[in-house]
Image (cartoon, rainbow, N blue to C red; front, side, top):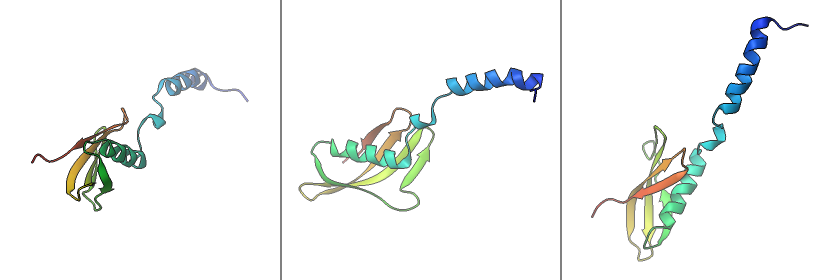
Length: 101
């Protein structure tokens, strides 16, 4: 069976486009984003005792380029603080924003 001329010409272009495209695995999944948030929160000073994620339909938001999570941080002295964790999907990094006191 013989391939027609347009298909023969398009095949190398398609292969080149797929080879140059960014891999899909470079972006962070929701599960990995939660892990990044938890690790970032545990590295805060003073070190928290526990980090948990708020539940509900507004507790996790997908934004262009990442995710935003509402988290609860329990300190060793028993204090509980609500914070926001922003994850950059491409850079695979998380930042914690605590409310100003």
